[in-house]
Length: 293
Image (spheres, helix red, strand yellow):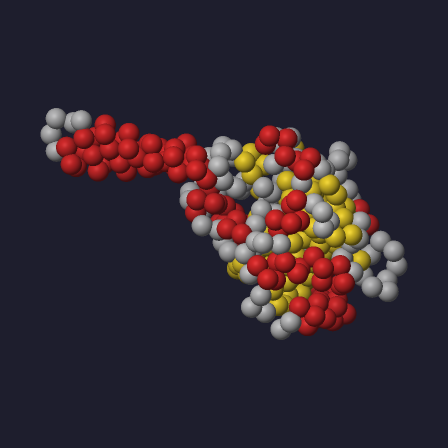
C-alpha cells in the first residue's frame, strides 16, 4: 500500500457507518499504521505509569484498554554514555566488593556484580524528567518539570474542552487553561504548515519509528468538527515523507512523542508498534490515549 493509498483509506474510513458507530477505525501496511478516533466518543487524555517492574510502562498502557494509546514526551536526565558508565561502574564496584570477601572470592565477585548491576540500573534509569509540561485533569497531573528548559524548544498537544474545536497543537510549553496537555513533543505541523526549518522536524525525518498525533478537520463539515488521526511509521523512508502527506490529507496540526526505540502505539490491549525495550520503559512516566467514559 502506497502513501497515497493509506491516506485515501483514512478519508474513506471517516465516512464508514462502522466509524460513526464506534468512533474508531484502523488500517495501514508494512510501512504505515494508523488509528482514527472520534474525540467526541474517545477524548484525548494523558495517562501516567502505574505498574512497576521492567515492563510496567507498557503494562500500564495495555491496562487502559483505550481506543488508542501511545508513549509520551522526550525525557532527560543523563545521556547514553553516562548511563553505560554509571551501570558499568556499579557492576565493577560490586564485583570488587564481593571479591574482597575472605572466602569464595569468585562467588562473591559474581554476586557483587549482580547486586551492582541492580544498583546501576536504579541509579541510571530512574528519576528522568519530561522535557516539557504535562497536565491532566483525568489523571490528576500537573507536572511543571522541564528538563534543562527544553520544553520551549519542542511542541505540545492539548484540549481545553470536550469538542474538537478545543483541541490545539503549538510550539513551546502548553499554555495554562488546558484540561489535558503534553509538552516535550516533536512538532511537525502547526497551524496548517509543515515546520521544515524546525530542528525537531529535521531529526524526525531520520527516525526508524515515529508515532504522530494529528488534528484532522472533517472535510466538508462545519467549522470546528474533526477527528484525531494517529499514524505510526516503521522505517526512515516513511518517516521522511510523513508530514508532507499529512498536510495533503488536510491535517492542521501534528506532533510526535519520543521516537525510534521509545515509540509505542496500541489499541485496546494490543500493540500496533512496540512496546519499547525494558530499559527504555524504565525512563518513561507519561503517555497519551483516547478513551471513552
